[in-house]
Image (cartoon, rainbow, N blue to C red):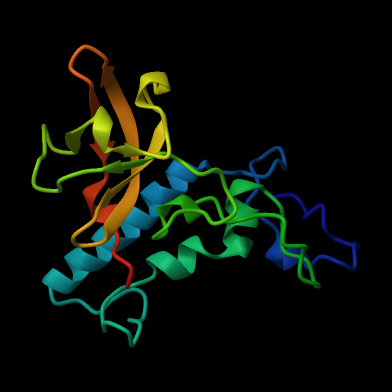
Length: 191
């Protein structure tokens, strides 16, 4: 790998550079890819725990299990490196960037766009990750203007669970939204 382009620039530490491809370009990932990485980490830890292996990451005292979700998704530095392709600096960079996976946090990204909230019943599941909700269950949005792959926040008022979902289909005739929900990413107020 070629020498880091940060060499000789005092604000940067070359060893802290982002991962770069063979042409020296920063390699970045999307918000959805960040979510996939977080999901994979949780699954790997759950499998290791079930097999009696020690965790790869130390448990947090809060629940004595793997709870890196909130800490990782809130990391502006990870967001800066993985999503923006920018290396850390010796001084803290300005607070202009929320990490790419903040939409996965309970309550969503406090600095990002406000997605429509859709009330769901977690017991109603269709084909693995699917569920549906009526137009009347949409809050802070107009279901008539939604289209395939739009982001929404699903929530269940009794348990307080909520998280990201995508619109799979809008059935205007029956006034139903068909949603794809990553059920393992739903979180309650306590994480």
